[in-house]
Image 1 (cartoon, rainbow, N blue to C red):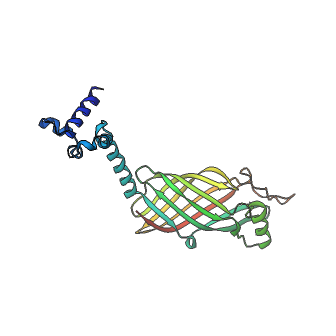
Image 2 (cartoon, rainbow, N blue to C red; image 1 turned 60 degrees about the vertical axis):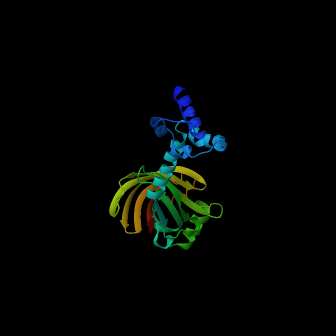
Image 3 (cartoon, rainbow, N blue to C red; image 1 turned 90 degrees about the vertical axis):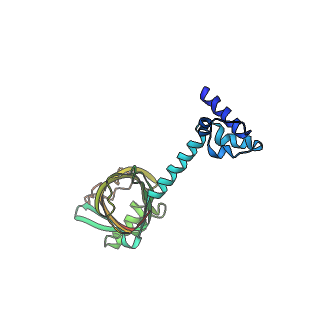
Length: 236
């Protein structure tokens, strides 16, 4: 409280052009010394509260640093895809889904990530039109849920400025409108302003709400292996 009262007295003296010692002058911000009496109420907000102006400066500097060092990744859908492999009674079914969009940022200082990668639910292609139609309508329910998304929130590992890096991306995988926590080991390659990234993970699709495609003796596994391939540009 004494410190606050001292700061107020110094502020008032500066505003009213009262005499201040050299030591006192140092304690008063320069912006306050040039203020006039009529601006006392307005200036009090910036200079009269102990450390308030300093706090604003630190906050602004923090925002600037994060903006300057944050990396922005723009996914090229034409160079990206999601492949899957599902075990069944007559062998492994392999297929692919199309990536429709992807934008995310990474803060190298703490690994924080924001953004989303979206996949077209109706684009599933396993090479069998009849099977694909059933998958898209019955399992993916594409008319009601046109996209499957992954929203990264954290990168663990060291991302090099160029070349190959490995790490883990944690985030939320949204399937049939419901989010599920998911961790994906990733291999990342940076080359100038371009990047490529691959990761593999398993989706327990039945326990996550999708219809079991098994029928009588035609059994299908309850988990599907997924391989994510992304490519695009990176900027700061």
